[in-house]
Length: 553
Image (tube, rainbow, N blue to C red; front, top):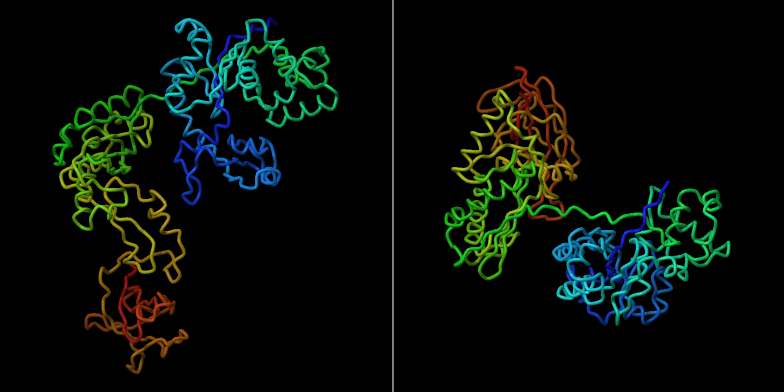
C-alpha cells in the first residue's frame, strides 16, 4: 500500500502556555497576589511540573520534576494547580486571531496549533514570510515568545519549532525532503513528549512505555530507531511502533485537520448617545433581536437560554441568563432586555447599585450584547402538524400575558426548601426553570432541614396558621414539655367554634429553630390527627398555643 507523502506544515508553539494562560486569565494567584514576570511560578499536575516561568527555569526548575525537587531548587517557587479549562479559555481568542490571518488552524492542545503551509505561503509570498506575519499578529496580542516550525508533516514541524527555533530566531524551516536528517539526532524521548506524534486509540502511556523500552535496548536517537527494520519493529511493537517508526524517519503521513470555527451567534448593538429610557433601548433592540434569531435559524438552532449583557456609559455592567419554557423568538428577546433594565432600576431605587448581585447600571445604556447560553435543534421545537393541543395554547396565552405585565406578572407554584410548609411554597416567574443554579429550588430541597415534614405532604396549606384548640376527655388543655411528653391524650379538636372528636393522632415531632439565640429561639411540635368526620389535620403546638398548619384532602 502506497504511503502518502508528508504535507508541508507550519506549527506554532507557545512555550509554557499554562503559565501564560494564568497571566492572561485574570492575572493573579490565590489570595489576590499579583502575578508578574519576575515571579517564579510552576504549574503542577499529579505532583509533577507541567510548565514553569522563565524565572523558575533559571533557578533549575524543569518540566517533569517532582514538586519537592522543584521546591528544593527554588525555595521561593509559587505552585499553581493545572487547569485545563483555564488554558483552553485563554487560548481560544488566540486561535481566532490566527484564523483571521490564515484559516484552517488545527488546535492540537492549548499552546500548540498547526496549519497547512501551502495556502499562507502562497498568499504572503513564502513559508517563512507567512510564519513571520503570524508571529507579528501574535505580538500585537502581547505574545512575544512564540516559536514557528515549518517542515514535512506536523510532527517534524513541531520538533522544528521546539528544537530548531529560538528566542533570537523564532522561525525555523526544515527544507523539503530533509525531515529525516533533521530528526536523526533528536532523542527518542520526543516521541513521548510530542502531541502531534500520538495517534490511534492507544493510551498516552503506550508511547512512554515504548520510548522507555527503546532506551533500555540502547536506541537513543530517532535516527537509530528509523534505521531499524520495519518488519522487526512491527513484530516487536505492533502498529503503534510502526507509526512511531515512520515519524522517526520523517514519514509523517497524517495531515493537518483544521477545526471548524464556531459560528458567531452573539449580537450586540451600541447606542450613541447612551439611552436612559428602557422603552427606547427595547425599540432599538428589535432589528438586532431579529438578526440574532435569524442567525440561529440559519443553522437550524433555537435559543433556550439567553445571556443579556448591558454595559453602561460609565463602564458598569449588568448581566443575567434568562430562561424560556420553549424557545426564544425576537419579541421574547426584546422583553428580556426590557425586564432586565426594569429590575436594575427597581433594585437601585430599593437599595442602590450595590443591591444588585449582577451589578447595576448607574448611567445610560451604551451597549447591549445578547448571546445564546444554551441552544437546541430547531426540529425539537417545530409545531406539530395538527397543532400542539391545549398545552401549546396555554403556553402562548401565558407568554402574551407575561409580555404585557412584566417578568413577574405570571407566576407558577413550585416546592422549595424549609421546615414549615408555607415557607416551601415558592412562586416562580413563568418560564424560569425551577432547578436552575446552586441557589435553585432543587438545591434548596436537597439541603438538610431538621424537623421538616416528609412526604406525602398536605394538599391544603394555610397562608396564615388557623387557631385551634386541642383538649383531653376531661376538657383540660394539652401541652408538650421540653422532653416531648404530651400532658394528656388528645380527644377533642375545636376549630372556629366547631367541636370535632379526635379518632386517631400521631406525634409529637419537634421543630427546633435558632436554639443558639435565646431571643429568637423557637421550639414547636407537630401532630397529625384524624377527626370523626374523616378529616386529617396537621397541627402545631407552640407552648400551650395550638394552630392548624395544613389539612390532608
